[in-house]
Length: 248
Image (cartoon, rainbow, N blue to C red; front, side):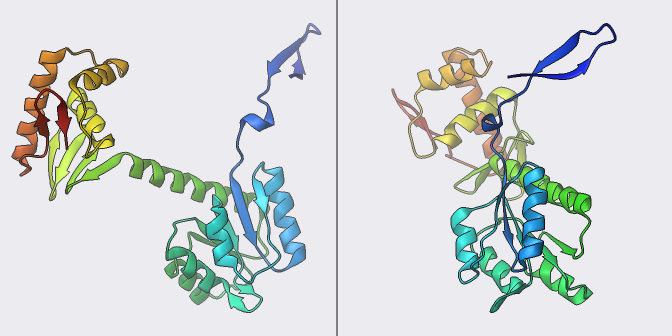
């Protein structure tokens, strides 16, 4: 679909192709708020900011519902019917890192401290400033995304860690720097830990990732990797299965 954004001085118009809404998956925010007026205000604010919004009105199994739906973030009131938002947050933290922002009328610093100690990611008091609330939601989501990306960049097996972001292998607080090729070889093995990775498939994977080596160069790199691992105290980590390939 084409949409006119602004005319030029000559009278012609510039047209841009806008992405269809269904092509972008909105982040889901769940509102846990028993005041219907505040709940509606938050729903409108977040919907206008292009978030997917849910706001349950039954608070009997709040924590279980949050864990089931797995929203990207929860806005949580403290004074809920028959329970405290603090207890809900603690229950969530027993099994999940879903971001929680307390949005409450309680302004006592002791409550704010308790909220953070219970696992809350932020604490905002009512009445809130809408742009500030949106900014703090965005900040928590961004921080959470960075944390998830960081987790995805570190692999672990038998006490050995492979850190893709830093380009190194770690064992008992000792590190070995890896070349680009060595890093990709170990990454391939870590993604298939416990399985035999054939030499042919490994070379093909490296070529697909712009690392152009042959069978002999693979053997040389494998020897270097083993040497670097031994320098940090790791012995026999990479098994050679003769005629088949490698396994960790």
